[in-house]
Image 1: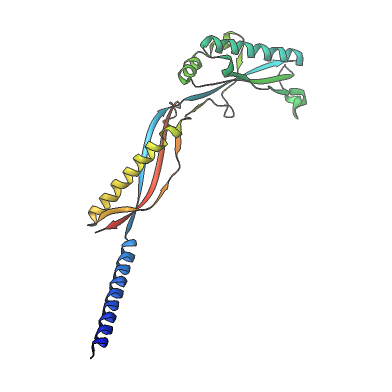
Image 2: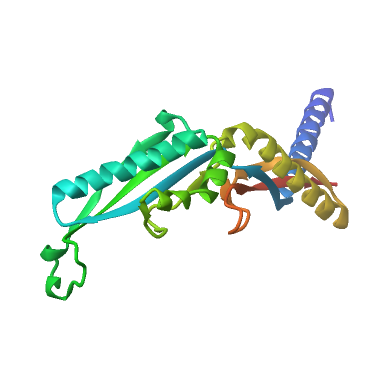
Length: 235
């Protein structure tokens, strides 16, 4: 074999070796890419509501519309004064249009035993960031009865709402907490399987849920988020 042929054989051998190594590395990387674990991380917090919406609904019954309107105006004014005396500001109090029922216009008017023809239901709504003042004033709302205001029964259509509006301020910290929780779960899995946790393969943030801590404490909210993270496993 002459020198040129030997040179060509050497080059060919090197190329084959490099190709083999590349195929081996590709196979290894492909296997490594298939080795990952999917875990979930949880973060929970309890926070106080920072916004309250308190509707006070009352009823007025009269036989003529003029007297009915006077009754509505009188009830609104009495509630407004009550709220202002409690410490709320005027721009936190608003009125809604009253709902009026003509009892004689009802389908079964002949069976109506009410002595009044017109019944109005009106609502005065307080919207404020002073949640504690709302809770305190709600306890004293029975005083309105002594002022001649006929309070309506609680309605599912106009419930008192306690809201938390500052979610964006705590989102980053909660996401970080949930991710750390997911990492801890992945490390435990890797330890049990004789592996180590590598880089993140994929991650998705779940939605934030806000609920009452319990039915008796609607002003205290429980915030919850779950993240789903995939980590590579390495030897």
